[in-house]
Image 1: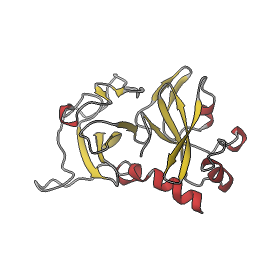
Image 2: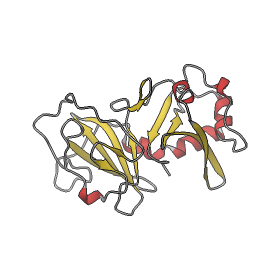
Image 3: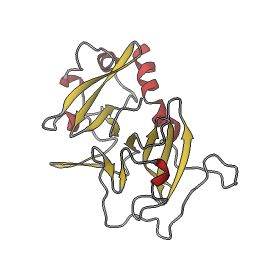
Image 4: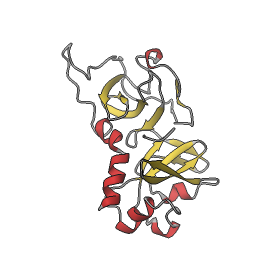
Length: 207
């Protein structure tokens, strides 16, 4: 299905490194060597939520070279990966991916995207995580759909408080897939059944 292939391409950067749990070589010549370790990798009482421009002390626009090598209760090491359009830096805590920074070849943190359900966004009635029902996004006061064009195609995202939310394409119904790639209007709310999940939460678009 054409729309499924396009949607998968939009999220290629996420799949390239975020879906893996940080399996990295220890040799000096490894491209994904662990860069830092901390004594206590277990998450503590401090909760770090993703906002429109940061997660904890990590801010959009910050130079990659200035990022802390580790932050207590947020991450204890990092791995890198090349994607078609960016360098991806995935930050892990106890070998569990927490978030990924995408650098579109300028040496800066251009986009911060959550990985799995390890971290969340604070919302008025609780939290939102990757994997939650997408109906929770649609229920947010002030949420707006936004068309993101790429070449001759595009995909719908939803934006709230400066954060972008995308639909998980896994087992996505064909009708919803068609609607997501139709730039004339966003999918109808009735298309979002309870099994449609959040697949992307970030400070910006993945391309």
